Image (cartoon, rainbow, N blue to C red; front, side, top):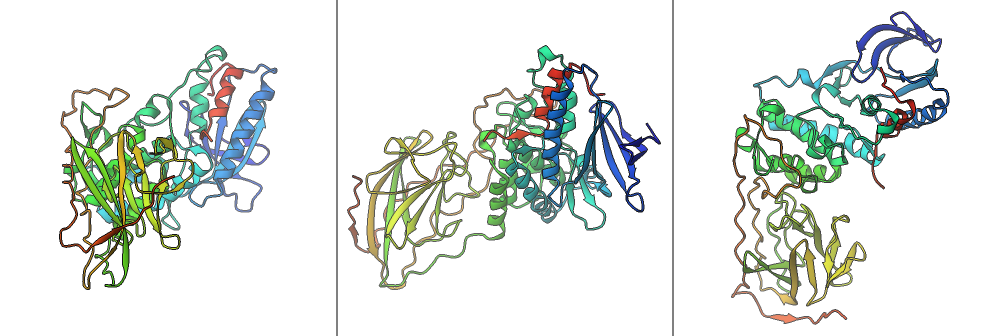
Length: 486
């Protein structure tokens, strides 16, 4: 193959990889002055049945168009060309000059927290972009991240398309429905190892890279809880509780307990950079609406007051869920989403509203699924999050005395590994694993009305697409071609 001219244009000058997931070469583009180098990936179906070629060609072109669309991002290699020659398929991609992240992750050397945050801030927008294109990378690892030489930016390479082609085509046409996992052990989430990757499988992989950087340990040396499958690394690092909390949620064992989108992770990082401000003083003559929630937790009655104006982690809204990094009210019920709902006060309409933040796990209001993204709250409403039912006990209008400040409630909870949940998939077993149970934050004590607070007048307000995995369509080529890409 060395020295061969493909498509009367691309001269092969060096082999990079062969076997496994196909053949990869460095080539020169002879039609451009200076003969710039590029990457050529050669996909050769073993079956040459002419009746199957049209369908195989259609699937290949569709997949190539997806890769071309992804190349519009500055931190993803551009697809320069794709063509067919002698019933074999070729992809031509931009050559990224630089070094891989693997060269920066030196065993035993721990990164500073600021460097890990910089890594997240660089790659999370790339993940957000590819997931918005309904694409899952499926093989995020240090070897597939290149720090570009000319500007120092991190570039995400080697999407799973070619690898899916190889793996799915290892079966005959009668076995084409068999799912083969794509990825690298240590960076693969549980569901991905079962052949069912999701967008937040990529988030898991990026989280593992960050933990590797913080601990100086490769993934296979990270301990895990044998009962829950959760990773135990938090005591091995010198990092802020906030960053530890973000990374812990990125790598939760079950995908439902992780951040669902890259945007959610970015929001968590923003909270680290902009912590809650000091309590806000309320003018003596300014009335404050106040909503009281009641619920039962651990056999005890709990009370939470939400005021029209009060300091919160996301200014202007009061958030409820399981994530102590993002939420003002943290509930331990494992069926509740990490960031589930938020309550806010509409100043113009003078009402409290409930907003759903998890469309895949909507709250039930008075027994009915939240019909819209926002709903006006009235006294007596019941709000069911997972298995927990919150009741709007009162909505009152209060006037505060001069100099009074609403307490900064609830106090920021310690950021710890989330409460272990019973896994739906058995965690992997290993002789080097260490059994340990993650700490569970103690339940918050009930908050009762403050005796010294002013008189309140009660206000009567009674109520009257599946992501496309790069390469998955080409997997059908296996069924058609009935052989391997070699």
